[in-house]
Length: 354
Image (tube, rainbow, N blue to C red; front, side, top):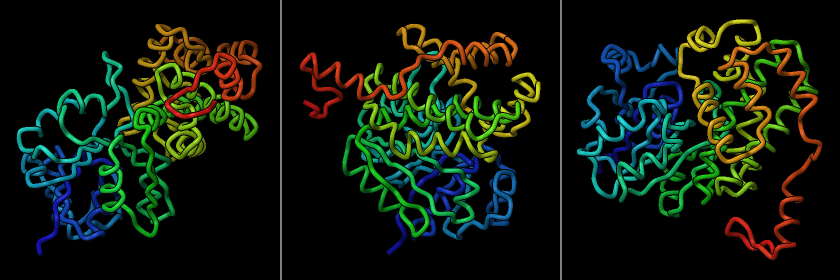
């Protein structure tokens, strides 16, 4: 019996490792890349030398620059392209899709101008399609080395969660499930902001005490913002929240962390981003989140401070000093908020807590 076809759209480092894992599990993978020269190179050498040099691709991975050919006959499509191109890519592939094809976003970003997450973009473009999101502490270069890694597939549909687990699970890539798709996806997007802050702090010579404080305060800020938008704040305690936050705030392999390093070394933001060589979603996400937080009245001092540095040109030292003086004193907000809800007789986030 011929192998089932799975499609991966996006020729970056994460799309490459996802395509390879799926092929290693016995599926035929149609791997769409925009660059025809890179397509020819991948098919000839079994290597994506631009993004993951030295990483050998399974013979079941077939690269193409024809997006309709890439998704034709597939019942599962992973979309791993930057948020700026996400809607266009989804819209372009739709004519060749079957109605029951599962669409899974791996993009950790927010659409500029609409404040839509990628699953919401997919829902607008393909309202009847089964949809999921994949997120977690997933540095592509470590997955390529087969370092033990956990990820989360989130969807409101159990059939989507189970299908993706079946396709991706391996002895080094552990797939967990969650039904809070919005919270999982929001966590993956928000953490990019705080990775920039952590990189900036590292460049300034701040130590592990500082990094630990930044991670925990960032987590509080993420959950505060997510709660206001309707996500379960407990989701941020999982792999797609604190797990992803830890790795991206602690590793120079993180693109957004490297942007922060460059900013901390005094480079302007356009130069910091250009030096990465790949899209760092955090700079765009920062702008979207700051505007939405202001609109909703959500207290986000870390994001606001970074916004002042990146978009208003304020000196780093001045902003850091203001943050140290102005941050609230409450350590853990979850229980305080829940206590208030209990006092009001409210059960929150669709789960019984009273």
